[in-house]
Image 1 (cartoon, rainbow, N blue to C red):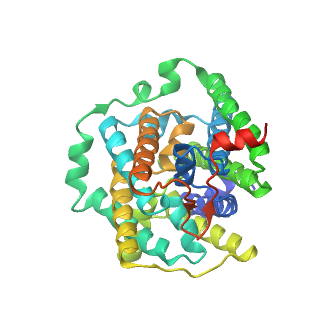
Image 2 (spheres, rainbow, N blue to C red):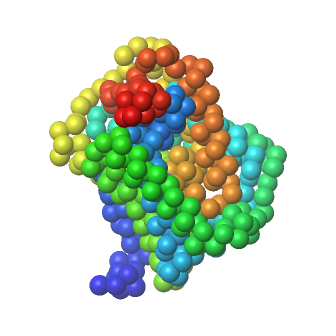
Length: 374
């Protein structure tokens, strides 16, 4: 049965939500298996470590970018009407919001998608942080924090269309974009071999990247066949978190959407992965100061993600995959702010990198690793 038949039989809204649910299940399963996490990647890079987490992130990043640009080169996808390209954007919002999000994910020990994955396997710290993240995001969208968000966003704006499209502005074309992705994919393969990254580490990360690609393709395909207008989008967690919260708290006749199906799908996929590999475990806060740190981090991520128009996945993978200027500003600000925050608050020589799920990254420096390999 083709997509057009499904749209006619089920209705556009249900098909969008069901497709997002399936894509979310794949993303959640693969993210849980690979331990995909921007925070861990930034810390490895900033501390000059080789633990495999930066390599995992690079696999996901390169796959998302290369796969999405391959679709575009084949004529199966066009980002021209996507909000990240077509609508007017804010460079100030991207920079400030990305920086706030980067600080927040260090404090909360995980970005928005990582918190959802950990919550599904029983991490109660991530459950609380995720709820606070969603409340703050909703407040920044339509509530008490909305005026502040709009004020910062107005400092420096950029027109939609070609002004936000880095492929058009640089003239590299889809072929150049794919070469860029291929370079980083090759680097990830080389580093994965040297670091002995596990099968699930690299394969799960590739699955994360393919999920982003699938989100772009699916929403574009639906928008081409649907009678009503539907946004062309891919995976993100700030807006969907706010939407799920509003649907839970308020009676609404709002139709189903891609965002409504995504979050439950990611949670389900992460839970299935954790259950299958016996990694379900209830964990709570260890101290009052620790709880305050998570709360502050979640607030900064919720506001920063809504201000920037994307989270570590929404901007760092989905937005970067279509080469929108604001997404790259957001991603750069996240990396810089997270690295500085880790240096100021958490970095002590010889420490391991603590994960929300109780795991840690090795603290062997890059120089030492290279020396041991001759």
